[in-house]
Length: 301
Image 1 (cartoon, rainbow, N blue to C red):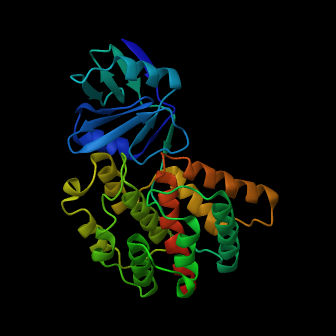
Image 2 (tube, rainbow, N blue to C red):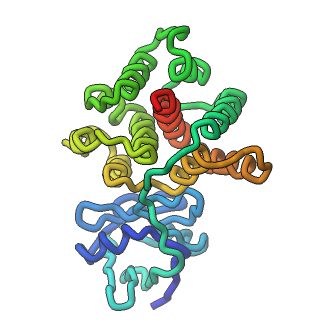
């Protein structure tokens, strides 16, 4: 049996595999696959930028072999003794090796003036590049709603709904009715509305928003009827404060970097690029959720 080793994997992977050691192919893409072990998904890819909270990263040649050879009937077995995934029909053993990364978000104490400076820098960059989003709205209209709502024109339904969430955040509320509009909204493996919610949830966790328990519970009710399996998996982990590393790294740099230093400014822009390049519009939609929450929250502290 040919053996290969992963480059890195989320600490959540072993928690899944300890409960269920037999899995099957869930979905297959050009450069990644999703396996299903009981109710949970495990993503295997060669993307070392996104690094999802249920991900395993492998060398490019490895994912090419897997995507080329795997059959829908393939059964995958977890060998707990060797900490390996066995693809028996493919005669392949994937050893879980390399860096184990922590996907959890821990609250931070942001310097308000510093964070506001960083946000202004990112907003200018965001507007200058006119990033395409999954809602079909202009960047300027969105930024107007989250920064200068009194002078914005809410002439589209999605802008009204975004403003409703902004008002909830401002009032310290987390009402599920404001989020239901976005669940499953949009096309793709992870609909834009879900990515938007993920961004809000990540920012909430950084700010240690206290009133999220009820919202998180309600978000997951009948979630598989509301959105795609893959999107539901990201939301499942978001509920337990676990996010892809490109999200957590961007939030950290946005809130904590001192961009008076050139290297820190470059690091902020790099984390921005790593975030928005995810998917067709997924990264941009997530960014919009992050910006909505952080900008509104900073006004209330």
